[in-house]
Length: 206
Image (cartoon, rainbow, N blue to C red; front, side, top):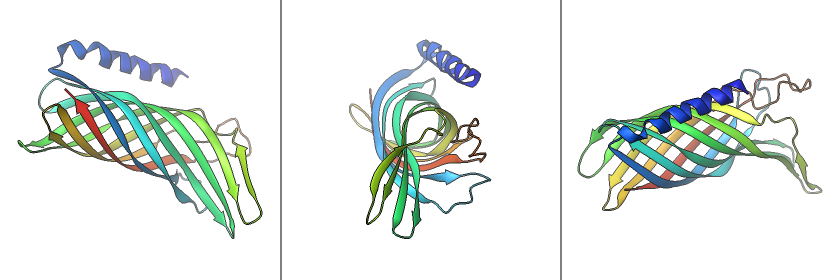
Protein backbone atom coordinates (compact mmCIF):
# COMPACT_ATOMS: atom_id res chain seq x y z
CA UNK A 1 0.00 0.00 0.00
CA UNK A 2 2.92 2.36 0.68
CA UNK A 3 4.06 2.00 -2.94
CA UNK A 4 0.61 3.13 -4.10
CA UNK A 5 0.87 6.32 -2.04
CA UNK A 6 4.32 7.10 -3.44
CA UNK A 7 2.96 6.67 -6.95
CA UNK A 8 0.12 9.13 -6.37
CA UNK A 9 2.50 11.62 -4.75
CA UNK A 10 4.49 11.46 -7.99
CA UNK A 11 1.27 11.98 -9.95
CA UNK A 12 0.44 15.03 -7.80
CA UNK A 13 3.91 16.44 -8.50
CA UNK A 14 3.33 16.05 -12.24
CA UNK A 15 -0.01 17.84 -11.92
CA UNK A 16 1.55 20.72 -9.94
CA UNK A 17 4.03 21.32 -12.77
CA UNK A 18 1.33 21.98 -15.36
CA UNK A 19 1.33 25.80 -14.92
CA UNK A 20 4.79 26.08 -16.49
CA UNK A 21 3.97 24.01 -19.55
CA UNK A 22 4.09 25.27 -23.14
CA UNK A 23 0.89 23.39 -23.97
CA UNK A 24 -1.62 21.05 -22.39
CA UNK A 25 -3.70 18.55 -24.35
CA UNK A 26 -6.45 16.03 -23.79
CA UNK A 27 -6.79 12.99 -26.01
CA UNK A 28 -8.31 9.59 -26.61
CA UNK A 29 -6.46 6.36 -27.45
CA UNK A 30 -7.59 2.88 -28.44
CA UNK A 31 -5.70 -0.23 -29.48
CA UNK A 32 -5.17 -3.97 -29.54
CA UNK A 33 -3.19 -5.90 -26.93
CA UNK A 34 -1.36 -9.22 -26.96
CA UNK A 35 -0.99 -10.32 -23.31
CA UNK A 36 0.76 -13.26 -21.68
CA UNK A 37 2.60 -14.41 -18.56
CA UNK A 38 6.28 -14.18 -17.79
CA UNK A 39 8.42 -14.87 -14.73
CA UNK A 40 11.18 -17.05 -13.32
CA UNK A 41 8.80 -19.75 -12.06
CA UNK A 42 6.60 -19.90 -15.16
CA UNK A 43 6.56 -23.64 -15.86
CA UNK A 44 3.29 -23.92 -17.81
CA UNK A 45 2.98 -23.42 -21.56
CA UNK A 46 0.71 -20.41 -22.01
CA UNK A 47 -0.82 -18.81 -25.06
CA UNK A 48 -1.53 -15.07 -25.41
CA UNK A 49 -4.84 -13.40 -24.78
CA UNK A 50 -5.75 -10.79 -27.38
CA UNK A 51 -7.59 -7.89 -25.82
CA UNK A 52 -8.55 -4.22 -26.07
CA UNK A 53 -7.06 -1.00 -24.79
CA UNK A 54 -8.72 2.38 -24.23
CA UNK A 55 -7.38 5.54 -22.59
CA UNK A 56 -8.34 9.10 -21.73
CA UNK A 57 -4.98 10.91 -22.06
CA UNK A 58 -3.55 14.10 -20.64
CA UNK A 59 -0.27 15.49 -21.99
CA UNK A 60 1.89 18.49 -21.12
CA UNK A 61 5.04 19.80 -22.79
CA UNK A 62 7.75 22.02 -21.29
CA UNK A 63 9.77 22.29 -24.52
CA UNK A 64 9.91 20.76 -27.99
CA UNK A 65 11.77 17.64 -26.84
CA UNK A 66 10.21 16.40 -23.58
CA UNK A 67 6.56 15.64 -22.82
CA UNK A 68 4.86 14.28 -19.72
CA UNK A 69 1.78 12.12 -20.23
CA UNK A 70 -0.77 10.55 -17.90
CA UNK A 71 -4.45 9.61 -17.90
CA UNK A 72 -6.78 6.73 -17.09
CA UNK A 73 -6.71 3.53 -19.16
CA UNK A 74 -8.63 0.25 -19.42
CA UNK A 75 -6.65 -2.77 -20.59
CA UNK A 76 -7.42 -6.47 -21.02
CA UNK A 77 -4.63 -8.83 -19.94
CA UNK A 78 -4.37 -12.54 -19.23
CA UNK A 79 -3.34 -15.80 -20.85
CA UNK A 80 -4.69 -19.14 -22.07
CA UNK A 81 -3.78 -22.75 -21.33
CA UNK A 82 -4.84 -25.54 -23.71
CA UNK A 83 -4.87 -29.18 -22.64
CA UNK A 84 -6.32 -31.51 -25.27
CA UNK A 85 -9.76 -30.21 -26.22
CA UNK A 86 -10.06 -28.07 -23.06
CA UNK A 87 -9.03 -24.40 -22.98
CA UNK A 88 -8.73 -22.33 -19.81
CA UNK A 89 -8.79 -18.62 -20.61
CA UNK A 90 -7.59 -16.42 -17.72
CA UNK A 91 -9.10 -12.99 -18.37
CA UNK A 92 -7.71 -10.16 -16.23
CA UNK A 93 -9.05 -6.63 -16.76
CA UNK A 94 -7.26 -3.61 -15.29
CA UNK A 95 -7.73 0.10 -14.72
CA UNK A 96 -4.35 1.81 -15.13
CA UNK A 97 -2.81 5.22 -14.37
CA UNK A 98 0.50 5.78 -16.22
CA UNK A 99 3.18 8.45 -15.78
CA UNK A 100 5.09 8.58 -19.05
CA UNK A 101 8.08 10.64 -20.25
CA UNK A 102 8.13 11.02 -24.04
CA UNK A 103 11.27 12.18 -25.87
CA UNK A 104 10.91 13.46 -29.44
CA UNK A 105 13.70 12.26 -31.71
CA UNK A 106 12.89 13.82 -35.06
CA UNK A 107 10.43 16.52 -36.02
CA UNK A 108 9.40 17.43 -39.55
CA UNK A 109 6.38 19.37 -40.89
CA UNK A 110 4.75 15.97 -41.67
CA UNK A 111 5.50 13.79 -38.63
CA UNK A 112 7.29 13.51 -35.29
CA UNK A 113 9.01 10.37 -34.01
CA UNK A 114 9.50 9.64 -30.31
CA UNK A 115 10.49 7.12 -27.66
CA UNK A 116 8.79 6.87 -24.27
CA UNK A 117 9.23 5.18 -20.92
CA UNK A 118 7.32 5.35 -17.66
CA UNK A 119 5.72 3.74 -14.63
CA UNK A 120 2.18 2.35 -14.58
CA UNK A 121 -0.03 1.61 -11.59
CA UNK A 122 -2.85 -0.84 -12.28
CA UNK A 123 -5.89 -2.04 -10.34
CA UNK A 124 -7.52 -5.36 -11.19
CA UNK A 125 -11.22 -4.90 -11.96
CA UNK A 126 -12.05 -8.44 -12.99
CA UNK A 127 -10.38 -11.86 -12.89
CA UNK A 128 -12.21 -14.83 -14.45
CA UNK A 129 -11.18 -18.25 -15.72
CA UNK A 130 -13.33 -19.40 -18.63
CA UNK A 131 -13.15 -23.15 -19.22
CA UNK A 132 -14.46 -24.43 -22.55
CA UNK A 133 -14.49 -27.86 -24.14
CA UNK A 134 -16.87 -30.06 -26.11
CA UNK A 135 -18.76 -30.89 -22.89
CA UNK A 136 -18.08 -27.91 -20.63
CA UNK A 137 -18.51 -24.14 -20.62
CA UNK A 138 -18.13 -22.46 -17.23
CA UNK A 139 -16.73 -19.32 -15.57
CA UNK A 140 -14.82 -19.23 -12.28
CA UNK A 141 -13.89 -16.11 -10.30
CA UNK A 142 -10.19 -16.02 -9.40
CA UNK A 143 -9.56 -14.93 -5.80
CA UNK A 144 -5.78 -15.38 -5.97
CA UNK A 145 -5.07 -12.45 -8.33
CA UNK A 146 -3.35 -9.45 -6.74
CA UNK A 147 -5.49 -6.30 -6.87
CA UNK A 148 -2.75 -3.72 -7.47
CA UNK A 149 0.07 -3.97 -9.98
CA UNK A 150 3.10 -1.89 -10.87
CA UNK A 151 4.75 -2.15 -14.26
CA UNK A 152 7.13 -0.37 -16.60
CA UNK A 153 6.07 0.74 -20.07
CA UNK A 154 8.26 1.64 -23.03
CA UNK A 155 7.92 1.97 -26.78
CA UNK A 156 8.10 3.99 -29.97
CA UNK A 157 5.66 6.56 -31.29
CA UNK A 158 4.75 8.57 -34.37
CA UNK A 159 2.55 11.68 -34.40
CA UNK A 160 1.10 13.58 -37.34
CA UNK A 161 0.08 17.23 -36.84
CA UNK A 162 -3.38 18.26 -38.06
CA UNK A 163 -5.40 21.45 -37.80
CA UNK A 164 -6.99 20.50 -34.49
CA UNK A 165 -4.33 18.34 -32.85
CA UNK A 166 -2.09 15.32 -33.25
CA UNK A 167 -2.84 11.89 -34.69
CA UNK A 168 -0.68 9.42 -32.73
CA UNK A 169 0.47 5.84 -33.28
CA UNK A 170 2.34 3.99 -30.49
CA UNK A 171 3.93 0.54 -30.35
CA UNK A 172 4.20 -0.30 -26.64
CA UNK A 173 5.77 -3.01 -24.48
CA UNK A 174 4.74 -3.29 -20.82
CA UNK A 175 6.18 -5.60 -18.16
CA UNK A 176 4.94 -6.03 -14.61
CA UNK A 177 7.51 -5.93 -11.81
CA UNK A 178 5.04 -7.02 -9.14
CA UNK A 179 3.66 -10.55 -9.15
CA UNK A 180 0.20 -11.23 -10.56
CA UNK A 181 -0.51 -13.76 -7.80
CA UNK A 182 -1.17 -12.74 -4.19
CA UNK A 183 1.76 -13.41 -1.87
CA UNK A 184 -0.66 -14.64 0.82
CA UNK A 185 -1.81 -17.59 -1.28
CA UNK A 186 0.28 -20.59 -0.12
CA UNK A 187 -0.59 -22.77 -3.12
CA UNK A 188 0.80 -20.22 -5.60
CA UNK A 189 4.31 -19.40 -4.40
CA UNK A 190 5.31 -18.36 -7.92
CA UNK A 191 6.67 -15.35 -9.75
CA UNK A 192 4.07 -14.76 -12.44
CA UNK A 193 3.97 -11.30 -14.01
CA UNK A 194 1.86 -9.73 -16.74
CA UNK A 195 3.53 -8.93 -20.06
CA UNK A 196 1.81 -7.07 -22.91
CA UNK A 197 2.55 -5.77 -26.38
CA UNK A 198 0.13 -3.21 -27.80
CA UNK A 199 -0.50 -1.17 -30.94
CA UNK A 200 -2.32 2.02 -29.97
CA UNK A 201 -3.86 4.75 -32.14
CA UNK A 202 -5.05 8.03 -30.67
CA UNK A 203 -5.75 11.71 -31.08
CA UNK A 204 -4.50 14.57 -28.87
CA UNK A 205 -6.67 17.67 -29.24
CA UNK A 206 -5.22 21.18 -29.08
